[in-house]
Figure (cartoon, rainbow, N blue to C red):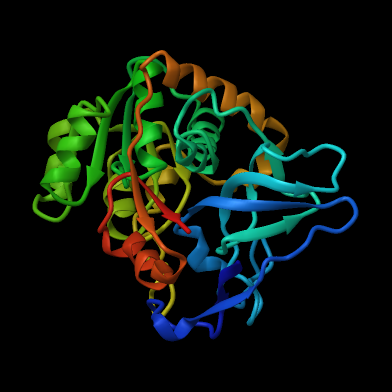
Length: 331
């Protein structure tokens, strides 16, 4: 048996391509003292991964050339020399784009699956769910009756943000690309409406759906849509800056907001955050998200693609929009 891995070959400018990556095959590693061997069952694909391969200062060191690509994973312990992990344990952690990985337990945690599909622990019950939970509740403190707008509403984070917003009593308007995604956002996730940015006038639709303005905007995309929402932000409005997927593959650098003075005149707040800042509260989020899911208040969808060797093409689905919900690789 062997271990197929994806390694960073070169740092891309713009979109990644096949030449960005090396797909290698090594022997399955053996765990040393205080380590365990995990068979990886699902690999999380997230927009933040694009930033991790840029050689720039950030909240986490860049992936080095020749290194296995960093990624969230879940899987099963198959050998262990670690006192806290035994064979058969289900483990969630950052073990990279590969089929097997050795770990000392750092950046990992054990979990019960509660009979749920394991891939959900990389989506609604994992980092995307935690991102939605803390990014909405801690950063914006939504109140009943407020209007919440969510971009990237059909994605792994945005779909959870909107559903939490509804649980908290908000009017929730999504923004997504294409009729199928917009229908999913409204019919499956329970948003009040969804604007199709590919086929509708976003500015006009925001006026129609948010006639009194926007109390909370959860930003996953940046660019023009951030500007449109800034233009309609209300007095004491709050913007949670989660991501800017429209900017990640720019060859000339990101474009900042033009309407930022709206924050000034409306005494509004725009605050960025990184979910890793909340590591000591992950179990709080997991417990609450799990309760909402078990009660039927929270739903999720996953797009699962098989094969480590499909990673180069599958990764770019994050930016083409060719997926629904959480994008997951099954090695």
